[in-house]
Length: 139
Ligand SMILES: [Zn+2]
Ligand SMILES: [Zn+2]
Image (cartoon, rainbow, N blue to C red; front, top):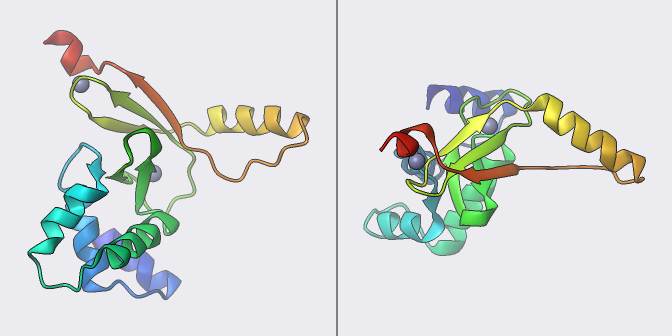
């Protein structure tokens, strides 16, 4: 949270109470949190949390690299190293739903290189690898 506040101060963007609260809620779990679960949580809190406002807060947090969207789950997860330029990938467990962020610059580089050989400029990529995590394999 301190890192998030510092980042917003550096970028000179406003870290509103709602943005802060949404970030807290996303961070409160190792599992990706769905937008509906967030809206449910926020409904009872007096932060002016109409759905469009919450979606804007989520967009803000994504744009500023504080959280990531897991497309296949339509859910959000806190970034484990906010503020650093990184192109990680996610290991998503199909049993427990945990999503672990991995460093993957070399993976991203090789995809970008393949893409550029096709004349394609890669702008953004979030790689999602599904499977079974070590804890669930042991269980
Ligand atoms: Zn990240
Ligand atoms: Zn698992």
